[in-house]
Length: 289
Image 1 (tube, rainbow, N blue to C red):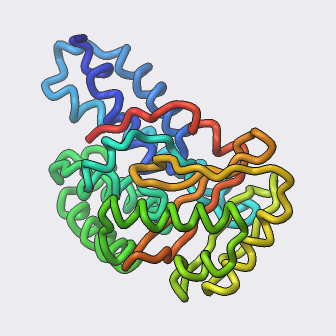
Image 2 (cartoon, helix red, strand yellow):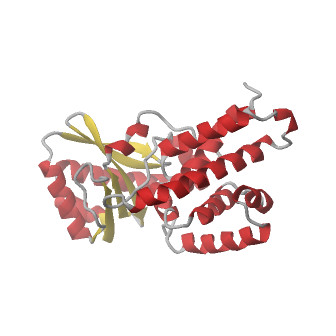
């Protein structure tokens, strides 16, 4: 055990930064910057170390998010968050699993920096309004209004229902089995008629630059893509608190796939193939609330 609050709350700090940034690499940088600032503080004068550290990491993440805005505007094709390898235990914390899901992080990307910070701190970590106000440089009254707007914005875009692990697993296994054999009908059976496929290649690997919609179209695109691969393997993996898939091509990690399931069928497929975003799939992330 350690008495250093930074070490104690490191998982929490990384989770806050990751949910604000959608990038594990940037989140880790922000956590390191937070440590540098913490190292220069006398812990004895900090009354509430957890709140103090969350305030620092939030401010650093906000600065980083604003600096990333231009880079993401210039991003080639669709931008999706960096996937994280997580343990099955993360799924047991339903609120945490939902908040770090690839689908939710994609929704959070549609919020402004301050709205995103307020939503994450209030809705995920249940931080008091006064603490959030201090972190984002707003009054508590303003933070309440921002939280209300952000909550409505996210509610209109988030997945409509929660899915239990058995239903997610069943749909994911059907998807992987059909894709691994190029079974067009098998894909059609597990995909919702209005399924949406979003791919992130970052201009580095081949990927559709716009969302593809419709069960028949998405099934055809997927089977065509795997038929081009000389040697590939599809396996289940825990991504961002939910069972997803990884695709290895010629023995190398080629893509991570997040799936949204509703009523037993897949409604959203989020495929990250940009190799710069796949490095965090080597070890399990330490997430905490």
